[in-house]
Structure formats: C-alpha cells, structure tokens
Image 1 (cartoon, rainbow, N blue to C red):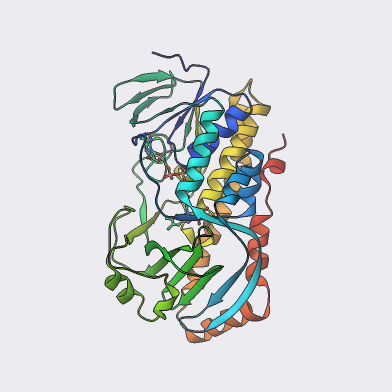
Image 2 (cartoon, helix red, strand yellow):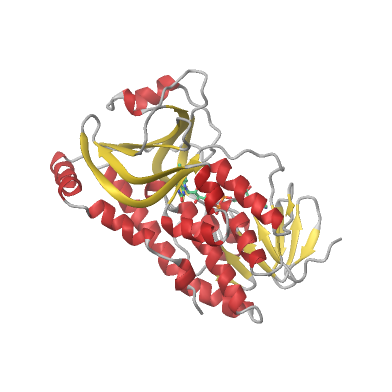
Length: 378
Ligand SMILES: Cc1cc2nc3c(=O)[nH]c(=O)nc-3n(C[C@H](O)[C@H](O)[C@H](O)COP(=O)(O)OP(=O)(O)OC[C@H]3O[C@@H](n4cnc5c(N)ncnc54)[C@H](O)[C@@H]3O)c2cc1C
C-alpha cells in the first residue's frame, strides 16, 4: 500500500477538500483526498461567490476559467412579494453552477499531481498513530488529518463534539434551475419566506432558492424531489413570475437547512476541521462555500509558514479562522430574521433603510473585502 506518512490526508472531496488540495499542492506540500462518493457523482444546484473567495480562487489559478463559464454581477435588486424595494451596488459577485466550480477545482488539483481516492468513506481515525481506516478496510497513516467532511463530519462527532448532531434551523428550502431572461441577482422578501434567483451562465439558465420558515423538520437531503404545484402553493403570496419558467418535468428539490453550534476550537491533536465540518451556517449571506475557501487557503498558508511544526500552523489557523467564521455564522442567521420579518411596522422600517441608505451594500462590502492572504501573513 502506498506510503502517505508525509501527506496531509484530506477527508472529503467537496469544495473545501478540493480547494485545500489545490492550495497545499501549489505550495509543494504533499496532500491526498479521500472521498466517500464514487467518481461520477454530480453536484447539482448553483452557488454565488463573492470577492473574498474569488480573489483566493484567482491566486489558485482558476478564476478566469470560472468567470468565462459563469455570470458576473455588480448590482442586486430587492423586492417585496409584489413591488420593487430597491436596487443596490455590490462588489463583483459571481454566480455559477456548482458543477462548474467543482470541475475546475478537480482539474486544477489533478494537474498539480493530486490523487482522489473515491469510494473511501472514513470509518475510524486513530489520532495517536494518525491512522485512518476506510470502509474498504484500507488503512493509511498520514502526517496530519484535514477534515473537510461536511456538516455530518465523523471527525467532528468523534473528536470535537460528542453526542451533538446537526439541528434543524427552522428553515426549509426549494431549489431549481430553469430558463429566464433575468440578468441580475434578485431577492424577493415576504413574511416568513424569501426567494433568491440569479443567472448561472450567459445561456439563460437561472437558479432559484426559495426559503420558508416552518416548524416541520424536512430531511437534510438535497435529493428529495417536490412538485411545481407544491412549490407554488408554498410561495403563493409571490407573483409566480419571480421563478424561472417552471415545467412539471423539471427537477425541483426541497430540503431542511441544518446547522451546528460554533466550536470553541477548530483544531485538536493532529486534526484540523475546515468548511462545513467546522462551521455549517444558514445560506442567507451566500458565505458557506466562501468560508470553506477562505479556511482552506488560510490553512495551506499556515502550513507553508510552519511546515516544521504543524501544531503552530494549526494554532495560527484557529486563531484567525475561528473569529471570522463565528461572526459570519451569526450574521447569516440574523440575515434570515431580517428577510423574514412579519410585523408591518418593522417591514416598513426595513424597506425604508434598504431604499434610502446603502446599508445592505455596505454590510456586504465589509464581508467581501476580507483577504485571507493578508490576514494569514505569519
Ligand atoms: C441552499 C444552499 C445554498 C447555498 N448557497 C451558497 C452560496 O451561494 N454561496 C456560498 O458560499 N455557500 C453557499 N452554500 C453553502 C455551501 O454549499 C457549503 O458551505 C459548502 O458546500 C461546504 O463545502 P464543504 O466541502 O465544507 O462540505 P460538503 O460540500 O458537504 O463536502 C463534504 C464532502 O465530504 C464527503 N464526506 C463526508 N463524510 C465522509 C467520510 N466519512 N469519508 C469520506 N468523505 C466524506 C462528502 O461526500 C462530500 O463530498 C449554500 C448552502 C445551501 C444549503
């Protein structure tokens, strides 16, 4: 069996795992990814990426290809259930299909000499020997373990938060992609719900996510299909033109949004948590994947600076990333409350602030200006 004892073993080949693989290999640090899913797994849905993530993807050399296959925005429009509230300027935001981002990260990682071991679900990790056992019964010894295994992280459950499972956030979401001539990011806000839509390319494919506050706990799965009728019933207070063209045959998915409380620390022993494994958040600021990209880039920089002592690298990473991600987790939750206000007086006050001040744009600007490259200068 191949010797990986000088490698950082990355568990999970999602956005965090692949970005980490690229960032480490680019710095000449050996790393290998172990992913539980088979090679041909598709990654549906869409994603928006803000400048805090885009400038890191640029340093990793995938930004220009991504930009060519995506849609770039500099403004967003906010409306109520029927009428426009305001339009505001944003720093460059890119919207794309998730599959586009994943494919570019994957190709970059492979071109840098990376390997992905698919069908490898981590089953057990011995932190003393730094030995990982997979469902295939293959065992590997690593120099360090980077857990990028998402919200249901086995590593988090075993070493960071015993007896604590993901909790339903109180929000459920629908998503789909259809044809429309919409050319910008569009938010529609109603009492207890909101809808976000945006083009994902220049070919008229528009993605939407429609979120509703509801007590009933939906499954976390992204693959639970729903019908056009149920979607329109759930969002009947909105003008149905908000959605791209909906056809009965198109796949629509409905699922529950789950969260976990912040951790005291994202490091333990020879293990570092990154992305959703460390800090899953509600998606109302579009920052979950951006935080995963910031985390992984920061950790790679810390490893480069402190390669002789990865404990120091872990501490530098934890010091910078814990503060930032806790703040974004909290702000994301607050954004949901602002979007879903029900009291007419508060709704009117919110709409006035949105219409007559650039507060929404300025708040986002502060999040988007962050540059992990400079924050991690050590
Ligand atoms: C509706 C919605 C919309 C969103 N929109 C945005 C957005 O616009 N912008 C944004 O920045 N973020 C957005 N997010 C958040 C973003 O999708 C996540 O934060 C991001 O995908 C997390 O990436 P990750 O790699 O950490 O985790 P994941 O994507 O969950 O990847 C984890 C990987 O680990 C693998 N894995 C799990 N367990 C094991 C194991 N035991 N062994 C081996 N492999 C394992 C999984 O198969 C998976 O490939 C959104 C989220 C939702 C729900």
